[in-house]
Length: 424
Image (cartoon, rainbow, N blue to C red; front, side, top):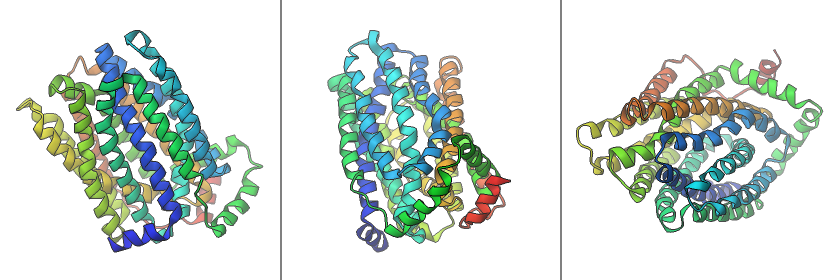
């Protein structure tokens, strides 16, 4: 714990990044949870719920890897500031949604939001390693994961309440306000001068290259470096399950557990309680373990607990076990997330992080889309519970795959080796 606080005290840029992330993500969870329930409540259709998620996934598939190229070319801090402001403006059309006849407005808004978000997430993943020394990277990623859980706890609980008070219009205003505040904090970040100088030197040569060539190099790098290839497969497997859960979790609470919007928001936020505790553990002691082991065992535990969550209503369809099980998922998710991001960041040189992360994002988008479509089509036919079990099973299988992978994935990336891998 002492090392954790020392890191926060020493690294002002990290504090600003985490604070901005907390504020923005609270708003995101307010909107995500509120919209998921409101769209299903207004339409009563799992297909409509799937369409909302689909609208946010298509830009991820089409722009995710391309956005990573620009994250390597542009000033990453400035990119994050501008995208936050544009994200806030993009939510204003939600003020027009008053009833089921105007639910269609949600879909183009989701498309625009997702387009802008691709540039933000690539810049953020690439910027964080520049703010802390390499030995502190696991701790920084664990803190970032904990921030996400705190945001889930606050935002998910508020999402159901805000949806009940003001519907989709109030949800949009709340999220827009958080984007504006986050942008003001990100504008204050200053990179260490030595790292800025190294980045400027590398960019002089990179800017003369075509976007297409940079995109090809990023895709080739992500597949030829063994660590990144393992992560691509892991993300593909688990993202199918996330598409399933994102589509069917609200129907699961409403139709299987007989809960309302407040119960849905509370169940989702309770996962963050365990995640906050797990984040503290990961931030304090995670650096003592290999990131690949954090990723693998975290995924196995995450999947096993989710399987219990989805299957227990077959015997007793009551709410209280869901609160307990969703809390237990949190620590597993925190360890898994810290391991995954640290593996990615240490396997990729600074000048290639955006492109490599863009490849991961694109794979995640395609896989999530597949899970979303399958859940939307099969949820009403096969059954919500049976389809949801594929999510938990996928995490278990992906974790076991990482354990069996004979890789030196935890070794830091060698820049020259990465360049050769991209060029071969």
